[in-house]
Amino acid sequence: MKRRIIALTLMSAVACMSITGCGILPTEEEFDAAPVVKEYEGASFNKVTVTRGTLRKTEEIMGKYKSTVREEYVTDGVGVVKKIHVKEGQRVEEGDTILSYNLPGSEKALKEAENQIEKLELQIKHAKRLMGLEVAKQKKLGGSKTDIANVKKQYQQQITSHESSLKLLRMDAKIAREEIEAEEITASVSGVVTFVDESAVGTYGDLEEPTIIIEGAKKNRFEANSELASHCKAGDVVTIEVKGQEYKATVKKDKESTDSIYFYPKTKLNVEDDTVCTYQVVLKEKKDVLHLPSSIVYSMSDKYVVYYEDANGLKATKEVQVGETVNNFIEITGGLEENEQVIAN
Image (cartoon, rainbow, N blue to C red):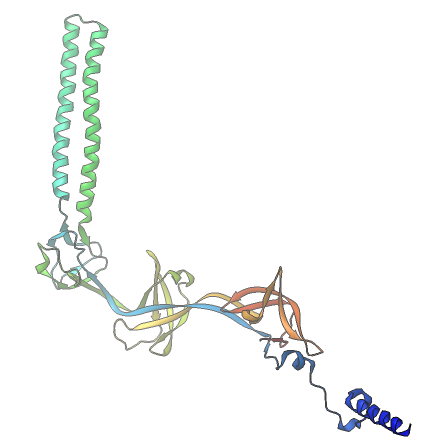
């Protein structure tokens, strides 16, 4: 009987030692329990702090430096160069004719149309004269009103047909004249002719090299052509980058082209023509707003949430209100405070 009691006592002691709540170990020797978050997640959370600042979306505009107004006129390869109206060293004004083409068929079409017009005008005049003579003859011979009306109708049909053809021919002639006028190239700037390729006369010209070059007033500006020009305001002083250096420049716009924009450096630059500048134009800007990376703000049904670590070390969700997304960051308009942390992973 004693042996059995001792065995039971030992088994109870062993069982009690295997249970942490039995209090066999002294308090100072107990190990701290691992955080709940680690038990469930297996690792610490990466966290991101809610930041206040400016969200800005930009795009790059590239411009090329032009020291002077320089216009190069290259033939289009469609018409033959009929005449060059300027010489090297000659001063020209904007709008002066500098070159004319001879498009195949345009002058011939105009001449044919004019000949046909002249012929039809004579036929109409002759038909009207014959109608008048025939009506007078019917009246003289005592013809009835019906006979006279039939004579007029016969000639009037002929005259109407000629007048319809005449109208079409006049339209053809107008088009031909417009084509011929379009064959005249005028100077787009005032300046001095610095190059003329006389050998282009009688040919289609060189499609890769200029036939005429005109240089005008000094420019000393960077010229850009971009659909983003509409986001720039004339007169603004902006920062441009040239060869890794930043410079202040004044923005100017082209009245005739909404896509053209010019940057005039505030300081004189010693750079060659076609040197490139870049300008970061601001397309969207939100100042003094709370924001987070958009990748850690989740859409759930009709609301947005973020994950955070609650008081028990568990991952929990919190609803937030959001505004605009700019460059992979999203504006936080409610639900979080500045410097509050949320889970990133």
